Length: 580
Ligand SMILES: *[C@@H]1O[C@H](CO)[C@@H](O)[C@H](O)[C@H]1NC(C)=O
Ligand SMILES: *[C@@H]1O[C@H](CO)[C@@H](O)[C@H](O)[C@H]1NC(C)=O
Ligand SMILES: *[C@@H]1O[C@H](CO)[C@@H](O)[C@H](O)[C@H]1NC(C)=O
Ligand SMILES: *[C@@H]1O[C@H](CO)[C@@H](O)[C@H](O)[C@H]1NC(C)=O
Ligand SMILES: *[C@@H]1O[C@H](CO)[C@@H](O)[C@H](O)[C@H]1NC(C)=O
Ligand SMILES: *[C@@H]1O[C@H](CO)[C@@H](O)[C@H](O)[C@H]1NC(C)=O
Ligand SMILES: *[C@@H]1O[C@H](CO)[C@@H](O)[C@H](O)[C@H]1NC(C)=O
Image (cartoon, rainbow, N blue to C red; front, side):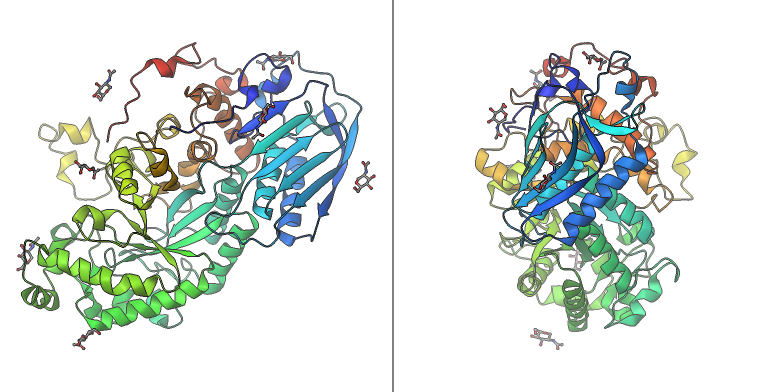
């Protein structure tokens, strides 16, 4: 990333014991003092300059409860027999000043904060409550439990200035292919907040199931997998509220007009094309289905569903999908074939298929944007459809080259390059009755190489962290990168495994979007991040979050004992070209 970073000094050996605590994500600018540790008496008092605020008070309680429940000592600290003297200086006050108490949690809201821990006070300054929440999650990770005196200390005075590089730092969860419980979604929000991810992109429905309550069309939720596996609007509001108290925006997605069958067909089977075909003839995966947008009935139903959901979700952004439209599916609809007849292919307008997509965009985008800013997957643009420039485009194909093309043509972009940021990859294929697992001679690739998952291999945290997703952009283009998201599509994910598949890998994106994957000299800093993510994972497990182990615990306890090379700057010597 060609971004200039203010270096956190504790990255470098030299400063005394400051190497012990290493919050994730690394703040933009950290200055450690060396006058010795600061002990906290009992629960500190919170003083808020200005109107106090429920979100802030709850975040403070959450921080202190976690600190006292966990009694955390980082593994590398516990292992260091030389660490030691704890001062008698006791603090009991935390002061928070906000200059803008009103700003809502929306795209682009200020998240800046400063955190000063001195021998006299802990002072947090932030524009907004959302910035102050980040100060708390940093502070929370600085406390170390002292077994002897049974209280908590921070190793040295410290001064932090912090602000994200990118305003959109997200995770995409999919409750269409498999269901995720409300509790599991909330748990992911807790971890997101801890590592300063601020957007949960909720891919709510897909062809396979429709688990959300729509009051205008109560029949839609009959396509939930079961009554248990569904979200009432009350559940949805609970999730939104939980997100808000954690500083996490909930951006809903209803994929339109593709990936659509369940739910819609309950309203009227005629508004869905190819829903009853064999999937391999009409879709990229089971199950098939796209809205038949040649019919006015379809348009009316879509408008009603959108109207209801856009009122339910307070976020100013709504994701309307536009993923993977298939011409073969629409060709099974007589209405669409008639539409094609009256819109013959032409060199200027393209095929009937492209014209139909253009008709949809021209008719629907002005309607959608009456109430929200919209995000779509990049597919329409790849197909050659003209999409209005104020649409936010989410990439998944074409790597850094896509990002370059889109930002240079004026779009704001969210990067989700499948080759780097899709967390569902690498678990093998899921389609069944598949002879490719039998006929080994013909399918060596399938069994030995790629191994049946379309986006193989599994994306390790190192692949995610080292991805220079803004490589090759001008400063102007980089401004159009709103941020990035890891995506966890749920063909093989439900409540039982979502946590292990997300964490701690998603924390790699949390840092690369917050303070970058390189230092201010442009050097890769994965060497330093290694200990942060290793300790972060242990911290999560202690919190009751089933994050996956990344290494034998020896590597956590004794930092850098598991490095492939000794040189912290080894990565810089290698060809870092990011393939598309
Ligand atoms: C152990 O603590 C000493 C003294 O505080 C410090 O200099 C050293 O870097 C620490 N070692 C590790 C591995 O953190
Ligand atoms: C970052 O820290 C350095 C060293 O203390 C300081 O000189 C600089 O002003 C800080 N930058 C910001 C933006 O706080
Ligand atoms: C805590 O802050 C309050 C209000 O600023 C002040 O009156 C009090 O003296 C402080 N207490 C300590 C122990 O510093
Ligand atoms: C469908 O709606 C369009 C645009 O409002 C209108 O021009 C057309 O006549 C309608 N078709 C039918 C069959 O009602
Ligand atoms: C769909 O039908 C149109 C019109 O008959 C035809 O031109 C086109 O090739 C078909 N597309 C596919 C993918 O079958
Ligand atoms: C980006 O644009 C260039 C030039 O038009 C084109 O060759 C390339 O295929 C595009 N890349 C992607 C991923 O769309
Ligand atoms: C780095 O790798 C890319 C892609 O394989 C290649 O085009 C380029 O020439 C390599 N650069 C160097 C300096 O080896």
